Image 1 (cartoon, rainbow, N blue to C red):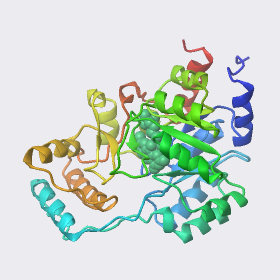
Image 2 (image 1 turned 135 degrees about the vertical axis):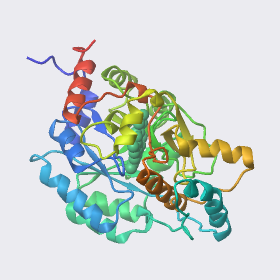
Image 3 (image 1 turned 120 degrees about the horizontal axis):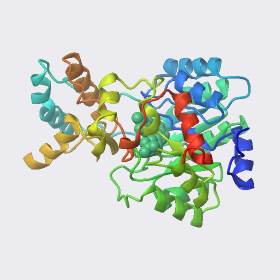
Length: 369
Ligand SMILES: Cc1cc2nc3c(=O)[nH]c(=O)nc-3n(C[C@H](O)[C@H](O)[C@H](O)COP(=O)(O)O)c2cc1C
């Protein structure tokens, strides 16, 4: 018989509200999480997530319904949206950025794009995406980079959704709680992989660790907290539950799983000594995001040496970043990919998602100690 789960009645009540057995969330990862990954995790009793931040309406509809088809009856699912501010497209800044990248494109036998476009629409002003969510009713919806309007929050809640939003600071946590509509705050620490959920990417950033941020939000707010950033093992899970979090959210730990759509170059880098160096950078997408150190992140060091150039707003920069990655990859160079990873990357394990969840739970309950 398996040992009882080491959870308080407080955590137990949230697990029952979220319809979960385990307080473990596989992070939504736009471009990396898949219906197979999310459904494997949800079917096993934790929370699987899909990231729709980079999806068109038809891709979003397809991804939600593909995942729903793979889910067993009554299993939970988290669907995630990017709620960034409108980018300011400044043609001079865009042109200088294209010039900065020119030699890198030429190295791989290509040319940079003539102009850069806003490649993703923010959920902030995406009425059609709201309608898709209202129609397909994923039970949990989470937001990154900011909050939608109170009207949208109300509509989603009235439709039965449980809402979650990322905070990277106490100030953002207070803004989220003030809406009175968000059920859970995801405390994303500085060590986290992928895009930093910071509301204003050019504003001051206290760079709080997951531990400190989780502690501060728990102390100052009433909304239940989910900890995210650097959590890689079952022992880490236990330490955040001990601190008072109701659950933990892991991204990097799941990137290397068979069910993730990270490309082979990304997975190989994650399982090599390259995992020992990560960098928070804006050069890839225009927003701060933590990536494995690679050819792209090194570009930032070079730009600083050559004299600073303004980086276009998110997601305009990403238009150039994706084009450069596609060109370099076609020539066998994977080092311009958005190889998002957190500081805990060297602890990533090469397993399929079901096996990884099993190991995490065993470590957490004490069998793996
Ligand atoms: C590859 C990757 C993609 C990510 N994409 C998203 C996303 O689409 N939406 C989101 O809310 N968070 C995203 N994140 C951040 C995670 O939600 C989470 O904060 C982070 O993974 C926690 O840190 P860890 O990577 O150390 O576990 C991403 C993280 C990674 C590693």
